Image (tube, rainbow, N blue to C red; front, side, top):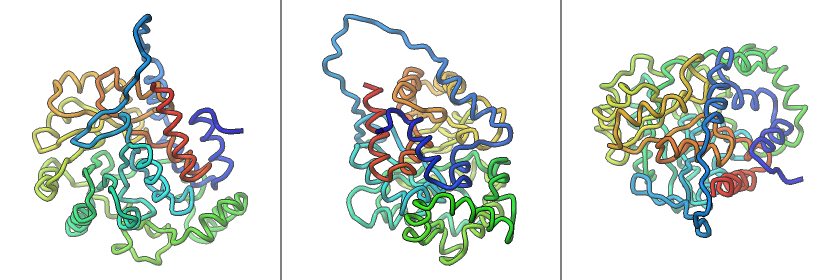
Length: 359
């Protein structure tokens, strides 16, 4: 039976991918209160219904930072998203491009920016995490320029990774050495289709944008350890200005929740922001994006485009954010669920569902 909603794809993905991978994407930090609030607060927004208005022609197209989009939707950057299907980010970008929406490729994607763009044509946006090695940041920014990325997305709400209990329980991060390998191995063995598609035929299992820093043949655990040691907890607003000096195109700052920070982002060169709490994966107890958005819209007064993410499960949720003033909406987990369940076709169908619901 074909999935009827993004939550159907969530269930299908859960049946297909190993538990440690599903929980990594699906879960939040600590008690997951902010993750739950993202969903509940967005769903609580009530829409005014008016009737006897001609809706025979509906046009969801829009322009964002000079880029034409078929609807106000962007595939959010998702770390390790590409592990959900063979060379997954390549498949996701093809689906996004065919659907006429943008995609932000994560710094910690499985497929490198070069791999995703090697087929030619348009390039995705590139999402950047600040690391301690400034030369590494400069190299990634330069690569994004060379590959023709239309925008750079600087994520600022992960100075240090949040405590994610699901990852400990699944042994993704909680059990080093042989015990962890055996636990993860059992989870892989329980998903033979994924094991063949991704584990056997989909290598290398790495973070493609970081192979020059960690090593092309390093195990995934080495990449996760490198991230924990090298994300720059000292980054401040001067670092945003520094990134601005290196990047000539549209610069998007992702991870804003406070109106004062929104204003500071504009002062330091942001062309757009994303109101986001990292999908409830960082500071648990933080305000939901739906609650944070109105005050930020009031503070900025429309001087730059404001996007939002968090809790989106349908086209109605996209409409809710747009009704609060968002120019566009980033979706993360739903596209990964589609990828995990059915590869490129799954991502394409998720986007089709969202567009139909939005219309």
